[in-house]
Image (cartoon, rainbow, N blue to C red; front, side, top):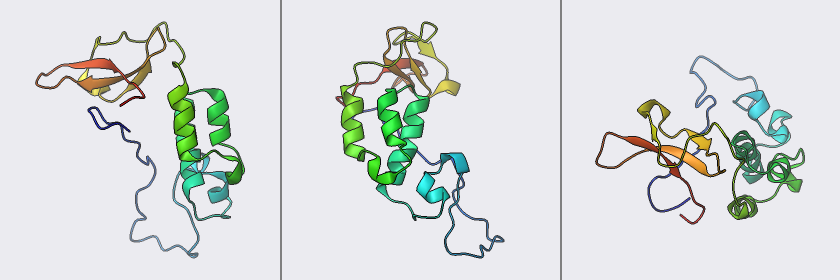
Length: 148
């Protein structure tokens, strides 16, 4: 993550807390969407940890079109076979470009406030994020770089 604007944050899109009326019969359970949980968490074999986070990041990166070899490694069934978060970051930073999208937006083309923080690939394969233009009411597709 860079130190300049814009910052992108990944958040859990699952259940944030257990409702007060739910009383689990076991102290070992996981809350979340089953097909988004790491295999070791689904099976109850592990309470979680860094490998679980790498698995979740791999699912998101796969949806964004990251290199298949990287996402396959990050979502390996066995946690010990997954790369570390820093190794995954380094591989991703070395990737030259994403998959070109002939119908994708051009860099710096306008986008709407409803698309804010949406992610797309340009026809040239650049990763773009719809972002607010400071001191204006405009939004535009801005290229993202790994050097931030």
